[in-house]
Image 1 (tube, rainbow, N blue to C red):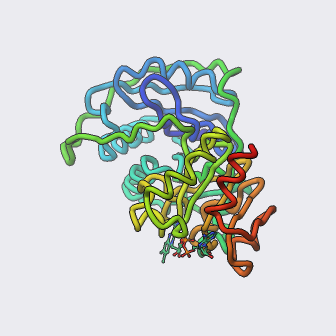
Image 2 (cartoon, rainbow, N blue to C red):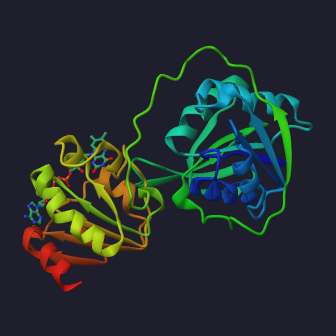
Length: 314
Ligand SMILES: Cc1cc2nc3c(=O)[nH]c(=O)nc-3n(C[C@H](O)[C@H](O)[C@H](O)COP(=O)(O)OP(=O)(O)OC[C@H]3O[C@@H](n4cnc5c(N)ncnc54)[C@H](O)[C@@H]3O)c2cc1C
């Protein structure tokens, strides 16, 4: 039994979501291979070889893989699955935007059911995954020969990034599928920790009332704590915060050590994205706000007074 993990990387280094996905692959049993598909990605492949628990890194390098186009990465994965003997028992992707773009293409071509957003590996063929915005956990058993899995990274500890010594095998890059082309990208520059990897997150909701107030109130607290900034969907939809800061069912799933929710009511779709945080602090002026039902510490207060006071005292 051998699992194949599809690495997320920037050609130079491995992104943290890959480490959690390796842990899920190890739990499936058997050997763990990691595919690093990119261009000029030798450094990322070398980094993948250091991950504890990985026995082989497959490094595919070529122009077709330059921008991580889903069609081409899927073709690369399928080329490996076709060539591997006795074949991969599990193919695992992090449940990130990138992984969720490629996995269904692989599953559909192999004619197997995808197992999405896995939070626990019960055994090699049985997995847990949240449903109904995380209000119920489904246990899913797959009879498919190859299990195509996306991994909810907050459900698994990160594998150690060093300590391994896997062999790196170079394979030819898959041909360009010719179905899509890269036009351009707009990368939001952010000096803060990445939301899904942050240890502390300060999130603001609709109560902030404007983008200016959001920046005035939330940013100083995040600066003080060295935290990432998050937001509710209502705050994002109203233009108070950028789209990529949204936490929740249709945003990012996070599980920091400390999550501070200021002026967020705690709708189930928001809770679905943050309720696995270790410690939750809620600031809300409504004592009946549902966020208090998941909060470890609740402060019933006006955030426009409480947050600046906190920043002053910190
Ligand atoms: C399919 C679907 C997917 C969704 N996905 C997401 C998602 O991914 N993420 C997400 O967040 N939402 C999501 N939503 C929306 C979700 O249902 C809520 O509408 C949203 O989370 C509400 O955001 P909020 O808590 O900021 O706003 P509100 O619900 O309006 O809450 C504002 C809170 O601020 C408090 N408040 C007001 N003034 C102050 C003050 N001065 N000081 C302190 N507290 C104050 C109020 O008491 C209230 O509790 C989704 C909805 C649907 C239908």
